[in-house]
Length: 220
Length: 242
Ligand SMILES: Nc1ncnc2c1ncn2[C@@H]1O[C@H](COP(=O)(O)OP(=O)(O)OP(=O)(O)O)[C@@H](O)[C@H]1O
Ligand SMILES: [Mg+2]
Image: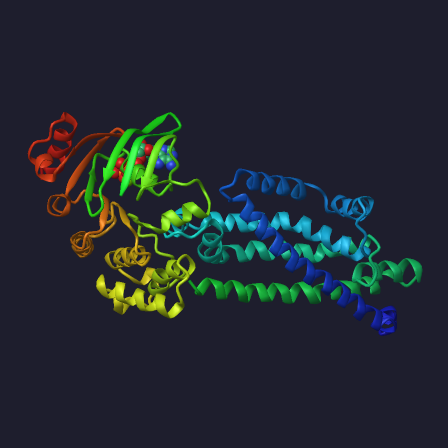
């Protein structure tokens, strides 16, 4: 039985590195897409028509394009216009941009769940649009927004595998591909090892979200 | 203090404000009356540009309403507004509700804002509720908190849009009392209300609206005893019938 998992145990260090690589992509991806997505959501509800147009266009394009296509554009398009960086960063950027469209829509639905009177009261005491959004509307939107955002972020964690498939080394999916195709190890045990790596990220994240959801639900 | 000149506004095909000309002098209390749907709320909301207008001009303290942006926010901070539905910030305590504007807009320190907030809450009689959340207060207490929140900005004008209409009858008086005190202190006020007692007792002028138009503009005595238009007579007949 132990023999069966030899491909994993023999390469345990590699798996740990790959796990950490994926974890890093996930963390950068989560922070980046939450910040960018919230920014785009604020564009979409802005009183300025040009900002609203940018927000709408952003969501329309990136929510409706397959992630692979977005990644291709970042990987091959950016170098073409003279932007060069390690491929990993193109991958993370593509993932962030793609996911931000979904974050934006989740945040926007949360903003819409806050009664219009709250924003009107905020504006009537002289808060600017940005102040009213950040101090009155978004804190209240948080309550309804955690569950849908959680789904978006967990989907993003899994999508990090597609970034790996682009040949970014040092993360779970590419490690799987290397071990199986280049080194000829048997596929199922390696696959199981990789799956455990993903579950170690997504399952605790799910628990964390449950806790967060309960906490924002009780605080008013 | 407020001057509206030839103001027009449509909601689609609906002409909600028709050639509105209205002046409210400094220290004056003007009550706006009229049947449901006559445009009273829209008039009130247009004054601090919560509703944009199609044409005409609105001036507050000599300055025309700026477009969206920082200048508009500044103007709004000088115009207090009290809503029918209170609209207290649900995620903040009563004290925090009152402190938010002074801190974020006026740049006051937290302790200074807190002192002012407590004084204002004392004044409207709910200082003991300062650390509760809006949902824990009665409607009357919430509306008094909302008045305190508006006063914390030291506004030049206060707009009230049916401030007692969402309240249970026994809570109406506590809110009206706070408003009467404010009027006596010389605050410039534009009040949309169906409280005839307040109109008779505290208002300097009554403006009667119907179908988006100002139909009458008179002292309370003249308006209630001698309305000139049929629409006002009809309205008073219905409202004073019982
Ligand atoms: N955002 C809006 N979009 C479209 N129509 C609106 C909007 N707000 C108000 N209206 C319409 O404009 C008219 C005037 O509304 P307004 O709220 O100013 O009346 P009101 O005199 O305050 O009435 P009430 O006494 O019922 O509060 C009404 O017919 C109303 O249905
Ligand atoms: Mg109204």
